[in-house]
Length: 284
Image (cartoon, rainbow, N blue to C red; front, side, top):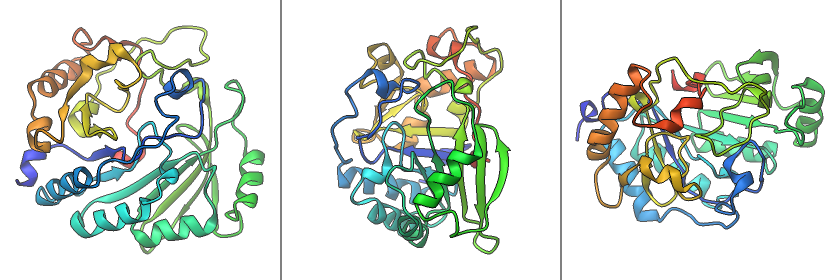
């Protein structure tokens, strides 16, 4: 397998664990019990994915999440270290709600090879406006506020504290989000908007990103959640247990979605019609 086989791929989500500790209304987990129990991706499946990415000389981002909370995974450090060894060009990323994060855990993750950490401090009320005060209180409690020299700035998701190591390039963002700007995840999440939003812009998610759930199921994109939304089962491409990443990446379904999505044609994927997902900065 060569890098050309995964041409265009620059962001991979491998959901190596199942459970999330939150049930937010603006997330599919708030309307399903699918993520209330823990289940780790089978280790041979994880190593198979890593081996194939390594053979392809993959050099993009790899996040250990989708609808799970990665810090609940007891072997997360081991997974990051394995990835650093077998896919040395990859850039590991952690997206977390921060409930379990402390300064020593952040230090451990970075030492294991993580290149990007995004901590999203979700509010209790979806209508809450982003603010720095709440971020500072939590960061002080977590032992993070004084650990780094933070920059405070607006970001696409809301307001953030941002720190980057100028030598290694490791980036950490702690975000107070604006929930009203969130995506409805193909109609499976409740977003507090008064006027339904319809997508008219083309989407390159299927051309640049690959999403794999804890069972090894490859999906159309990260907004698909077939284990809790029956209508999303049509967006399953296949399983890493039965096919190679190269075969799944070039599957006729993926190729058809790419062509249609590049032309803002949602006829073969109606879940996309109300999606306002933007490619995160880390995918550049």
